[in-house]
Length: 180
Image (cartoon, rainbow, N blue to C red):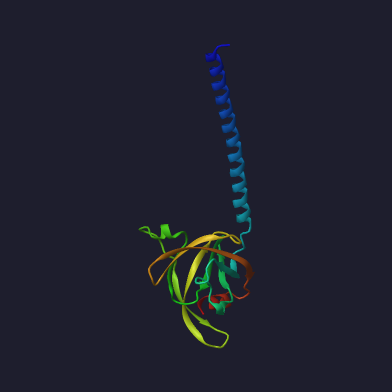
């Protein structure tokens, strides 16, 4: 056997092995795609019926959270399969929220979330004006991105989640809770 023939065979084997590896990688990627599609479908199955709910709003920050008077909960509204949670924050220190990451919030044309002025009443009877926001909720029980900007005009990325929805019997009470 000539040296040239051996090199040709080794090259052919190497190319064959590479092709097998690529085929294997394709099947692995197809499996991952199927898994991701199933996971998204499962998240969609957790959709609630249209209505108004009290729900836990959790964040990754001690500075960005629901006002203590609201006991960690916001008002989750489901309409035509779309979910939005109204949360009253701890103060007026957070001036804007964006559904997504800070990098996108800084872009021209980025739409900030609507801000409200809410009155919260504490257990001692004292009341205070704070900012509230209506935040779109893509799914329950899993984190999603929300960016915020405070009075110092610096954007921050945060992870938030919404869980434990409990139907609110009286929509008027829910509306009051959202604007108190």
